[in-house]
Length: 99
Image 1 (cartoon, helix red, strand yellow):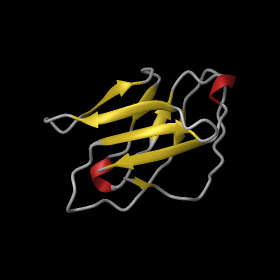
Image 2 (cartoon, helix red, strand yellow):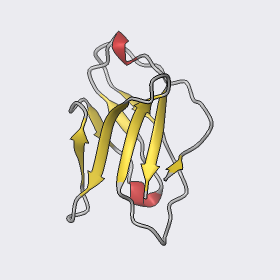
Image 3 (cartoon, one colour):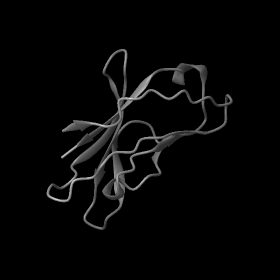
């Protein structure tokens, strides 16, 4: 597995609205992606995990449906959108891509 991007980026949003958390990485041609996860940096608690389906779409295996994978991990983009923002979403997040 590889941690994507060591650089922190501050993203701000409005309560009740949506925000995008960007995550880009260099994809591997020789390995198959198994999961994309986002976790809280402070606790290493996974807030959402996505897995690829045979049809090429990614589904949420855990986490609320407020989290939407908007990037294409096969192209090195694991960005997500968080909908219906609340103050509880104010954290430092890590993007974890596993092969």
